[in-house]
Image 1: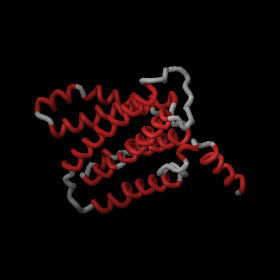
Image 2: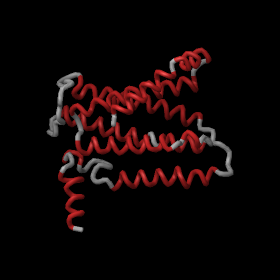
Image 3: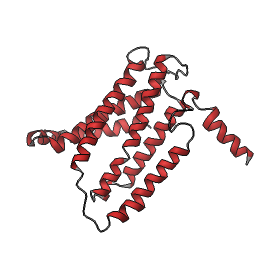
Image 4: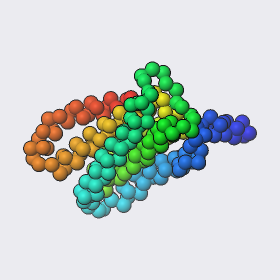
Length: 216
């Protein structure tokens, strides 16, 4: 038992980035595990049971503003990561994270933490599917993607908040700006805009797949 306790301390405290030890949701893995367990319970047990004999909920206004928030937030996160190293001192070689308390490395770390918060916000999408009676879209692959991405971004902030590994979340955030813009225009745009978007939908899918693979 002492070995397990010691290993837990070493992995989650001693080896972690000391700069984030007091940051929200970063102190230990317990909050993350609780969030994931709650999410899975809600989407697999609570909401399906609640919606069993109810009509689909009209969430058009909610989803519209959700897309707008995601567009703005992902654009800010992309800009923040890009200008915290990639437009100043970074290169495409083997760059290790800078664990110092200098302004730029700390700025990079903060924007990576905000990227984690955006991944947390994305869990809402599964709830939207179930409330709209579109359970097939809340597939195993969909749930796995959101949970695994959340865990990966948490671990990145906890252990390697910067360096070459920050390139993937920067690109992923940029792709999400395009993705949520597509969703917003598909729902709110004119017929001409929607027809144009349908022609280019396959390229959005390709970008999503590439950015997802790069973040793993």
